[in-house]
Figure 1 (cartoon, protein in one colour):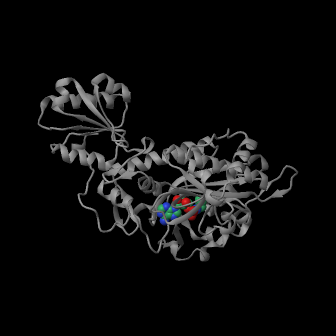
Figure 2 (cartoon, rainbow, N blue to C red):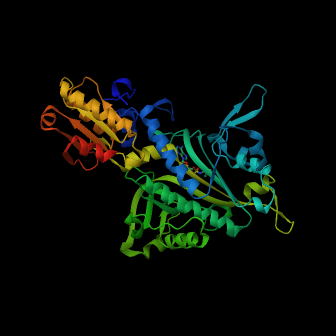
Figure 3 (cartoon, rainbow, N blue to C red):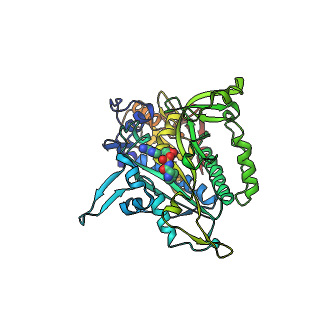
Length: 437
Ligand code: P5A
């Protein structure tokens, strides 16, 4: 992409609307614009990040055996009357009436829709277990939308729903998602800690929030230092339920809780192994038994001809929230530092002096070769001062910068800068290309 032909509306000044650094940087780098309170347009640069995050989530859901589908954003109120949640949900639900005076709503989540769909799609124990997911916009009329895309009203969620014949099988489905989430966040360069969450009326030990440590997080987290290590533990084979269960049992022996579930007496036993921090909830997984299948009449025939009400769970990832959360965890005073896996472009090209014909010629050549090889590259071909281009590149945080100036061109080298470490090296053209292709 040539910056001269792109739409990336950078802001020079911090915005008075944004209280936290990720929101500031998303506005300043032209990733998003607010169109109404808590509702954001994803500008071209932001959309690239959102798509990359969504794709990693998708690949790890698929790997764990979940099946992708797409449910509508607008749902009929009657489904929520069946489950009994229509009145219970309260003012966070955006209620809509259509021209025929039918009550509709913009879905804040999709347990009711998926349960109604499965009513007509699975009939027998042979159709179980199944986990379905979709990546779809949700709406929650949050009383205080804030922190940009981190607490929006309209936001993109990956929501998965599992259906099992019995509790033991439901536990396997739950544990598979637990592992899939650790893998998902690790691939984004993130270290998210699964904390014990309030399991609600079902009880038991099957609800976890995945918390990303960040100074501006909304929750206080208390955890065993074992969680601090950061390295991704070996993850078992998804087809081996015993290995998955053993892995989860091993991880969950280490204490981790947010303030809501924190047990000071239990935590005190950890002594100086207890760590505290602030964090952002990027995922949340639940087991809720037959809450929806029972109330909505989802039944299958069991192996002996008996009628069985399937066990269910649901599993959410805040896809749009992650864009902000990753910036919160990865930035410096000059701007964003994208992990390679979710960067909008992998590399940026800058000429120090736009009036130097030899520099521009070399930049064009590098741009063409990298683009042809399928590398995501952003070429700042604008007629701007070098200083402004450096600042813009640091702000938008691409992992690599190729810097081309008259002195290097004379020597036959270009400079390669690593955004995260600030390290710079001079490389001859072919060596540079080989780094990316
Ligand atoms: C699980 C999937 C659910 O809704 N039903 C389907 C369950 N869980 S949840 O915890 O309420 O939400 C899942 C994740 O969505 C993100 N999220 C938000 N992101 C941005 N703005 C919001 N207002 C918002 N609300 C929830 C969080 O990452 C949460 O973990």
